[in-house]
Length: 390
Image (tube, rainbow, N blue to C red; front, side, top):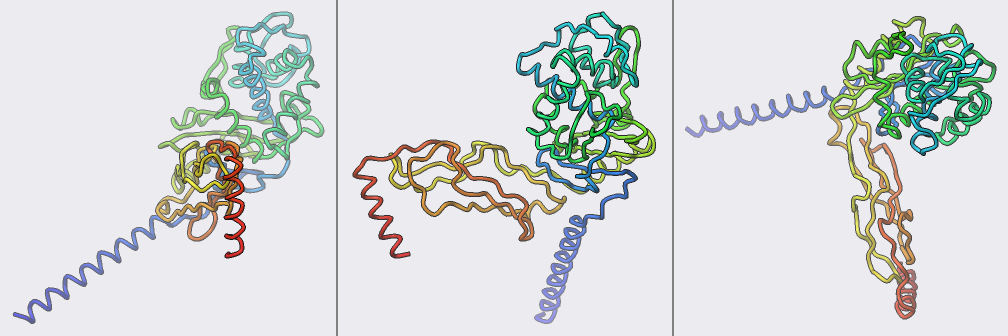
């Protein structure tokens, strides 16, 4: 009987070990990430739109002709001006001879006519109209040259360090360039800063002057999760595409520059988006304004201050590795009043497998005024002796 019980226990132990081994193997397999796909493009990237993390990229910082991807900046400035109340979608724009004569892809506006800003914006985004781009540039800045200066100012504000614009269309010009990484930053700004206009980028057709033209982004027909953004093509730039898609709460932005056909730019973009969605996920850690810790304040009207973040904190992690994320708070050793709201008092460091994923400022969520004279003196004495001891 004892021997039978021993055999039973041994069998149960082996079964348990086997189950644990299978589970460990399955977990390890789920965390395996293959190399990024081979992409036939001069430069490319796929980026998590929420975190800015580059999942895969090649030559992303190099400067190339952006062709009509330039119009992303044109539409960005139009949307910016609308958001500031400087112009409205119903405002009428007088079409100049220069705008009417601009070659390449066109919206087919007529010289001397007046066209609504909203229609011109759709002509830029959906039809890639060079004539619409020039008309808007002249309406906003007085001339296309002055508008280009405005484009470069906005580029600097967006951190687009490898971009320079000399026109509103992307037609070939000396010293007119951008990079895949800069265009991804611009795409993110279009999505997050002007969500009320972003739906335009997903529209498949736009009709003006009884001429119906399709959006040149083939992915809008092939992938329901794709909702933008812009195509471009010149002989010098090749076929380019900035696209964005959202699945299961995760938004990705892909950029391909210098492919050899319309089909290639769609195919290579789909590769990048599929890879990012299949093997990575966006993990939300903390919300802006969420109290992460209360900490001691010396010489203050109050003895504690609440700490948190000014912006939501999310990270991009390989699927299956979320449980391995660790977050730590690193605080200043001594925090003395006065403390201003938003003042940086430490860091939130997020690590994965011992390597830092991101580090962001930990700030005061509220102000703390100085305490009474007696309290300030008393705390100064206490800090002096604490310093001696330490």
